[in-house]
Amino acid sequence: MSARGEGYPRRMKTSQKTDDRDTGANLTSPVMAAFKVFQQELDTKHDKHERLVKLSRDITIESKRTIFLLHRVTSVPDVEEVLTEADLKLDGVRLNIRMIAEELRGEDLHQFHRAFTPGIQEYVEAVSFHHFIRHRTLISLEEINTKLVFVKEPEDTPESQQPMGTPQVLTFQVTPTDYLLGVADLTGELMRMCISSVGNGDMDTPFQVSMFLRQIHDGFSYIGNTGPYEVSKKLHTLRQSLSKVEDACYTLKVRGSEIPKHMLADVFSSRTAMMDQDEGMA
Image (cartoon, rainbow, N blue to C red; front, top):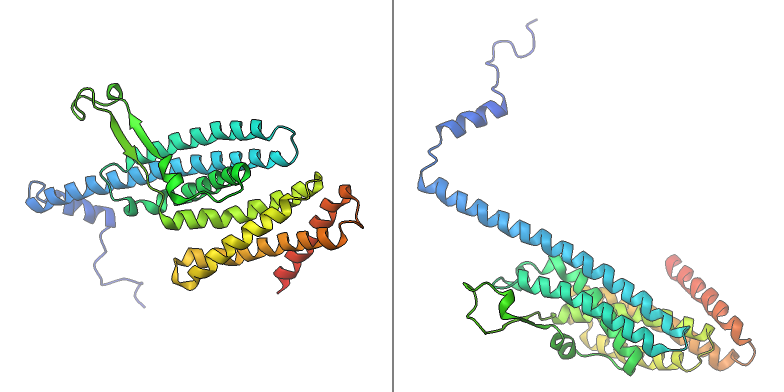
């Protein structure tokens, strides 16, 4: 019996065939020149995408640190000091957003949107949390975008790009979808602040948070399934946070006089864990 493959010509190695094609290709042809241009454009786009992803990660990290800092307001006597420190951290986050605006100058924002949207959502969550603690209201999309207008001084701009003495204005606009997703994530932080405030003897914050979350829930309910897919997914998490806060308010109202204040936080934590377990089994 003949050996396997006997009588058939041996196949050339892929690398050898590729070398033969490259050797025989006319590198000066218009087609090759056009594909060289395409290659450069794709490389430039991929490099920009990677830089935006890195900036988004930095924004996410700093925004989370700001949120952790803001949770200290339930346990410190001077709330304004914490808010001032958070302001400084948010200014640092905006510097990274300014770098995103510079990267997107002259580009289509939606072409690179997926690269930086996680960081922007986290920033919206942090700045809205900060605004709620100070004003007990929801920050608007217009207020967020107003703080994302950056002026670049003339000496920082090359003379070939900008006339002498004319400042360059960079703007970054948070999209409505990123704003809604950031606000939806805010509800989880408010729920945690509600539980922490009770443990420190603050009996008013849970009811304020409950009313605020009901208003947000009503607003998201109007959107329903007509909005972006990501928004409808967040609605379930929002309802969970609202349910936990309402349960805490019920316990305060009905059983608050029966339970010592220093034990309320433990009671709420155990009830929250039981609710999470029930939702996981459902």
